[in-house]
Length: 442
Image 1: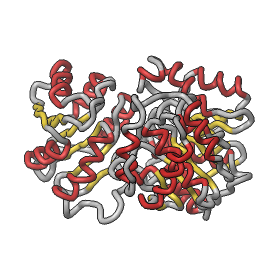
Image 2 (image 1 turned 180 degrees about the vertical axis):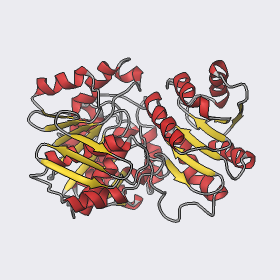
Image 3 (image 1 turned 90 degrees about the vertical axis):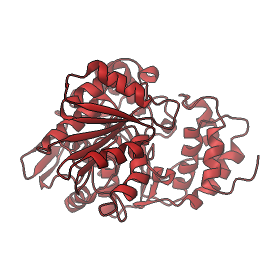
């Protein structure tokens, strides 16, 4: 092996190590983690679900940070930079700091073949384990039971909304998918289920393993009006809360689950009401119903399954009237594309379908064919482009100042626009540091 001296070198190496991109199962990665002596000496919160994981992790991080705790976060995938996957004390880790941990994984894995996800996760866990943290927040990649993140025993599991996605890996209905998500539960530990109508498989698994189940509607509730909202559950209440800085009505469900998780851990990680207020008011997460104000208005959202696209459609509807809505869209071929296009189709006047730089992606031409097969708007139009940035460029050229442009779908789609499209086409409104607040995850 040639000497690997940069993070990009290591990431390229990791991509070549294993014959498949996803290989669910814990034996290989657990064996390497054991050889590394990998463990956390602080409370761990593990977050699984179909949508809302990233937003929930960001809210947990923001509130616990405001409470004065030294936080560490592992999340995936990233939008623009790999380093987004690891945050320590609220700051994205520097690539150089990860290099010794990549070297450590390589030195101790022996002949064990690891996927890109497994190798990089172990490197990040190694860094977090040495960072002298008070709390670690871990986002599950796919499913839960067989996802590599599940090698770590959690002190509190948080399961967000559950819907149909990754059916080839997790099963074809919510019951099967719920069973996989429920695999992060541990005996005697709290599990917060934030889905308002959870699959029975989730509830049954909590009983089977002896987890302390916190269920929305039974163990905690929330309510709100146009100005503020309130939360109550198991001996704790918060009243007069401002709405989370992450946009979208669906974020209240995520925030309610977050407050339940923090309440479940209050003996080990007490937080004040002021920390809750400050954290929810300051939380940031790019690409989740992120609105870039200007002319035209730009909306970025990584909605890439029917459930998250439904939330996106509701949020777009709540924005009010725009003369014309332009949509830049690129997605993976294994998604329920017809359902996604059908849900948001009535509010899109002009489509800009894009190829994406991964074999898993549907082609722009394939997306347009799917749209044409189900289109019910004879006045709508569509074009195909080689990249999301080219698609955005065409949308900007065609849009009037009062119009709206929506970029949604895969992380590849939104990430490309954040990396290249915004600086090039929206320079006056592009992010000087971090993107504006946002909503709806994968």
